[in-house]
Image (tube, rainbow, N blue to C red; front, side):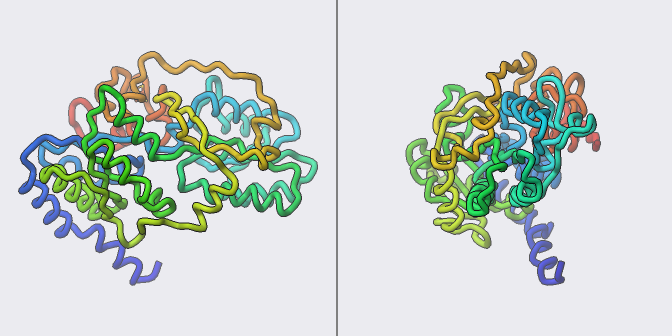
Amino acid sequence: MSSDTFSVLNQFRNADLVKAGIAEIHRITTHHWAIMEICGGQTHAILRSGLDELLPEKIELVHGPGCPVCVTPLEMIDKALAIATQPGVIFTTFGDMMRVPGSDRDLFSIKAAGGQVRIVYSPLDAVRIAAENPEKQVVFFAIGFETTAPVNAMSVLQARSMGLKNFSLLVSQVCVPPAMQAILSAPQNRVQGFLAAGHVCAVMGYWEYPEIADKYCIPVVVTGFEPLDLVEGILMTVRQLEEGRHEVENAYRRVVSEIGNLPAQKMIKTVFEPCDRGWRGIGEIPMSGLGLRKEFEAFNAEKRFMIDSIQTKESEICIAGQILQGIKKPVDCPAFGTLCNPDHPLGATMVSSEGTCAAYLRYGRTRTGVMEQK
Ligand code: SF4
């Protein structure tokens, strides 16, 4: 990393600037406001840097559904496991899906038992593996938000241009705006302002958000991931709330433009189309996912492997769905840190290190308030 890059990054961790922003939030806050950061990466950055503990008591941060591993349905994990155990299959995935438990095991245990499960850093690696192993079926587990969709789409286009007949995607892609609308439409909604996820907006821009801001009278501020980015996002949201405004603003201008990355959006549209999608812990949200278009059906692993319908059952204790919608916090769950922990997760928000329950445990936001670094 060059010293220039380092100094730019350090600027966004500058303690004096962060303190000045926090002081301004204290100065202008007169009401209780519940603000949701959508992305799990933002949740971790907030807890890791202790920003939640520096804000006025009246500013409550609630944590959204933006952890891709957490919201991948259990049923889809079980489908991945069923495909990965078939003979002649090489199942490829990002590393963070390896330990996510399905109903009775995880991908790691299949690999340990001799199964062909490989960690890749890009779906394009999976395309290369397919080209090198024409006698095998190579499947990539395509999960995530609009951030992963372009390269997943690119892998399909590349496989097609190479004439590969042994490459497919197990698709569980989700999109942020429909989830925001589902949260705001719920009768028990508490969210009054959104910090929109900066990396999703780097791809998609923020042209989709004014309609949501108008319809639900809610401020939406595009926000980055460093402490100063987060303080600026929170400050701009609180300022709007205190002034009775509901606009879309951009606190991540060094990365995000309103229109976003048009070639990436075109790539997504070429290969995928909107579809209904289940979110673990929340349930199905209409038109909240991306599925392969009909002309790319040959690359659909669910069709290729004809997995029988899979019945799954989530823990009855788990309140992850309410946590992902900002209605409850991890400390409200009776299993938090006891029956449910990162080694034995019972629900969506503990399965990934990016999940809210995992973050609360890691950074000591426990019932007793004792700082217990794991
Ligand atoms: S602590 Fe575990 S059981 Fe409780 S809500 Fe979180 S994931 Fe679910």
